[in-house]
Length: 417
Figure: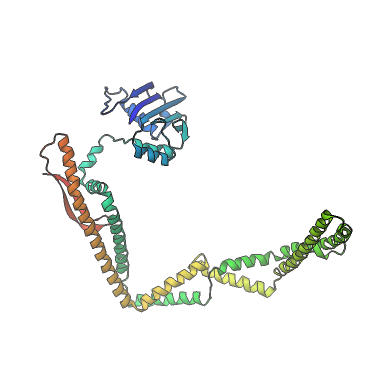
């Protein structure tokens, strides 16, 4: 429950506090007294749109605060799931308004505007002037019913939407399938040509990525070979100062202390292990160097293959995988064209089956709605009787739409009899 509103430096308001009690609270006053400002400040505190023109003239900042008492355990649980914890059953939403920006807090902790709005949606509903007129528009009546019976109609509505889209797709394909024999022969020739061009290239999945990596390796092989060779020189080939030779000398020198004590033995062992690792490294480095040795013929073949693939990419897809997918689509299309009568007959059967499924889903959804409408109108009548509208005769009348939609076949309207 909203208990208190605090407003400072907003429009005409210097500072004001409004306390709210249980039940109906009414703000009254003549035109220009500030009722709209009070209601607008509530909206601001809940995360409504703000601009600097709303500040009181000459004020550096404005402030709006709402204090709520929270007793509903389900509401407390929902707030705690959002890491919002009422203190002693109270929750304070505040928003400091400054030039060009604002800062929102909940119980003194700064929160984002998104969090503020999510919390606000759990705490309060704001209904605007003339909102009741939506009730007079019969286009909204079916929506009201679906909201009331959400648990019953949600899944049937999803099935209805899927069935409708499937029928629309099959109908579109069937409508677009009509062609003359000359046109069919022309498309067959083009499809066969494209398939031959792709299939004769003998592409494999991911081949373009592998070739591009190899081509890059080839074009950079000179610099890479030089770097590897220089490294190998430092570690193995230099007659006087290579690492392997110097390490061997160090091992021979340390042999004198190998058996002197445990520490000497350990150090000698480490040095021998380093020498072994370096030898392994030199062997692997030598093998690595060989991987950069390419003949002109290999380079020419790789370059030509990449050119061929890039030519196909320009026509059929951005990658080899996309080209292969395109080819598979064309194979299916060629099969349809070569067995055109069978294809059309299958498409008609699929369209008819989709239409039946759509009709079935629409009828099931309509049946659920009509059942829910009975209890919905009873509850509305009971509410009206509580307001002393006696002997009210209300029903929801269903009409079948001339054209099916993703929402089904129903057109419904509340009628007072």
